[in-house]
Figure (cartoon, rainbow, N blue to C red):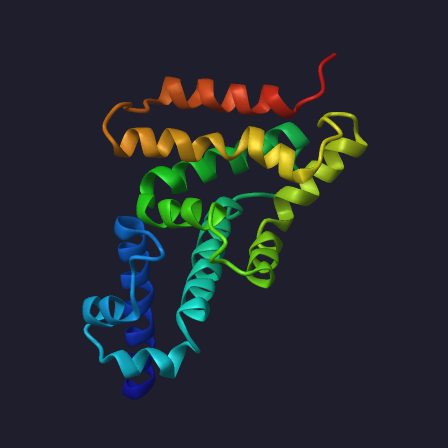
Length: 194
């Protein structure tokens, strides 16, 4: 049992080091040797858990995406109305991005790099299924604009990354009123106009 825990701890240390180094240096300036050093393991140890750097980054992406979506959907119930469900999910995503800034920053970088392979991207999208299903229901009910899910995400969820980065840089302090304004803007961007 102790060996298993030690193994889990080493893998977690590698994932944590990858997130921190990628956030501070970018993907290409994060060699395996730096990851191993920060994780306090030998470089050879990485290859017990990951095939190569690509595999390490992809698996880290999937792990963080799962954590993100588990948090986002923790209180979601499919019986909620489309608007109530979207509001609850959006506010949980905002909360995650502001509280788990390092993980949210890593995901934002992953969204904008060719480093993540398509198979891992598709796996990440699967984690968003409750939101995608909500949007499909909303489209069928005439509540959500008939746009692709990529467009819906770009207009309603992605702006949170910009706000999170602005807060991290210290140029903006999001209070409850500003978050509510941001939510209302997100909802207005995807709901059908009457």
